[in-house]
Amino acid sequence: MKPGRTILASTISKPYTEEIEKKVEQLRPIRPQGPLLVGFLANEDPAAKMYATWTQRTCESLGIRYELRELEDRDFLEEAILQANRDDSIDGIMIYFPVFNNAQDQYLQQCVSKEKDVEGLNHVYYQNLYHNVRFLDDEQKLKSILPCTPLAVVKILEYLQVYNRLLPDGNHLYGKKCVVVNRSEIVGRPLAALLANDGATVYSVDINNIQKFTRGEGLKFTRHHVEDLGDYSEELLKKCCQEADVIITGVPNETYKFPTEYVKEGATCINFSSFKNFDDSVKERASLYVPMTGKVTISMLLRNMLRLVENREALK
Image 1 (cartoon, rainbow, N blue to C red):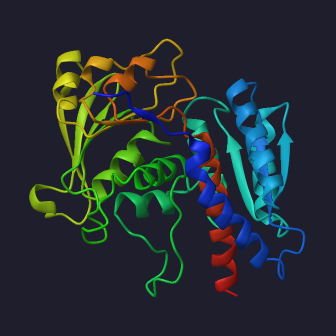
Image 2 (cartoon, rainbow, N blue to C red):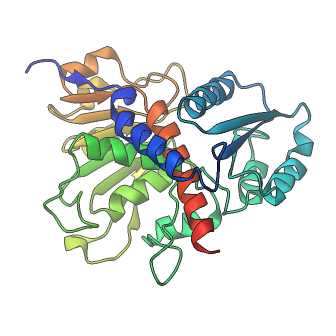
């Protein structure tokens, strides 16, 4: 088997950045200077600062205004978010996590109004995602927002033609088996739900156990259901990977490496962690390998913001 191809996020994001540029121009009559995105940074995490820098560069290159608001005291972050919610000049708000690195961070996510939540973390958007609801209104004019990193992984899979467009809408992953090594509430769990809602069988892996997300035999359910397969073990993980068409990792640990020998020959491997979860040897087994997703994630975040602007204008 010849070595697999490495596909860069910059290549995948290109059509989306072109789409964003066009939409920014279309919004000139109502946003002459371009839409405004505000990012809140209240931590010293180098990865968060890097993400903020990437976001600013991308925004400026696409005609979007970006403002980073850094807070030395994280206890003032909630009030800063609420003020931004009330500011009509701001089109989108994002927070660089972790802030408190506990349940308080989930509370801060919900402080951002859903009309400005470019990351798609508001409970309304999460509920729609888990229940496989794609619109905010009965008339299906206002599209719901999806969390930007899970959405980025979906768009990567579409680009790599893992999605089968010959199947009916909503079932494009029918017959595919995926492994997601991460079950965070921000990325891993919603990603597993998204893939299962599109018809895949998804094995969701974390340090405690392994779960199976599926819409049932023959896709009999309209939304995913979850089954516990047992405590985490290397043996169970290996078994889940034997027939996996796609392996997605997001382990926030510098030393973690997914076992290359568990990768089925010809599989697609994607890593959304800021750390390199796959060894270079993965290309000896995988046919397609995406080592980072950051640029696609930022494109989805900006795409979400423009959709929020359009939704607000549609309600006027």
